[in-house]
Image 1 (cartoon, one colour):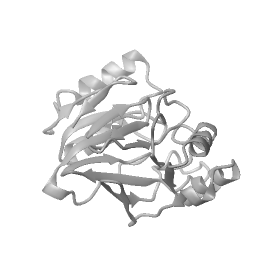
Image 2 (cartoon, one colour):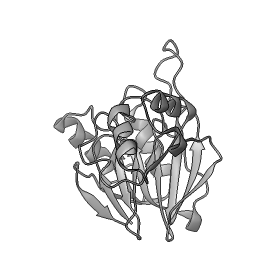
Image 3 (cartoon, one colour):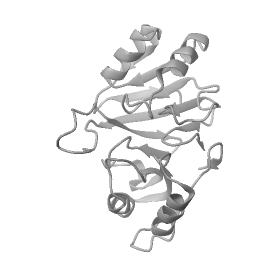
Image 4 (cartoon, one colour):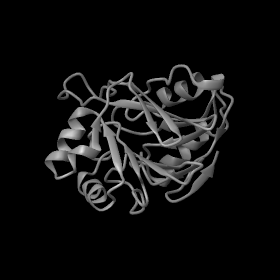
Length: 224
């Protein structure tokens, strides 16, 4: 499969049969995030992970496209005009069959920003497996993927910046989750200096970890 980074927390997956799956097309994604997507997965309804207007427009114009998301995100999309019959709510424990891909839904809890902040939305995670290859998107969390076929992820999408996290947590997840490649995501708030700093801590795995660190620019792809 081919992974394409579309900015911040959004990635596209091109499956071996040519079908395209997009995860977390939010407000910081590039303009091509939904191009040709027949399946859309959303971890939660924060605007940087789900920008309703372009998603609704895509579902209206691409009549073979379907979307899966937590209930609050589904409700928001239907209220915004999304076709209800092609927007499905998911919960941790669900298993989706999307073309050649098998997607396991996990998580459920958004990482805490502060004890005094308002309640946060449900945040699900997605473990996508196709043709013996695997990719994991944790949304706004450091929830680990659990058991993976073959015992090792091919790609871990790793959040590296946000008001709900410390870089230490990203380092710990990179060390704890066996993965061949670590691709940083949730980096839309970082300056070039910040991106360089994160890379220096994670690129060489100098605090432990056996993986290749692969930072992608928006529009850049990685073949797994």
